Length: 186
Image (tube, rainbow, N blue to C red; front, side, top):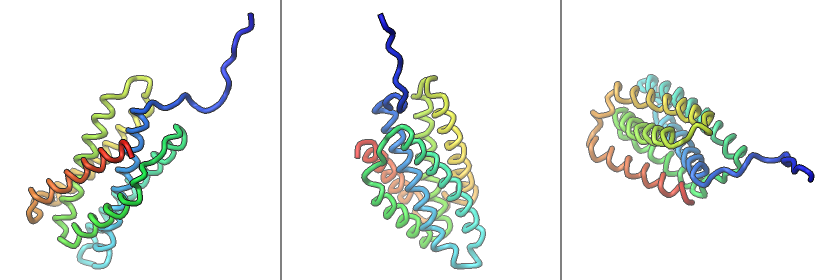
């Protein structure tokens, strides 16, 4: 009797749940990069907003690293990105530009709310993953730590002092949750 040897090739199929996680996380990081670009487009024009422009540049660079890592994971695991990526780019940039035009506190409020939703999302995913996905858990944990730092910076800079903060935060939070739900499937 001959023994069947494994055929070298791609990794085993990614579960539907992990594929959805990666798709959503990729969309979220893509949206975060777009938000920061929209905010930078407004704040990089004035010497008086140099501080926030610098902070946004640093945060955008970290989000871009997350996006690059998720691009790699999507390719490795043969997971398609969300079909909504172009819309998330437009809405993210628009959200960033609009909140920046409302002022620094509103831009910080946007960051505080978005990063809170994202870090909670990563925390839930980390708790859900089993030990067989230790590398993915570690990646998500590292990304979550960056999101927490962004949120804390925004809070320290007065995010909750933004005009109409309760309304602004509720609208942004609802938008984030809607984007998460849509990106899981589409």
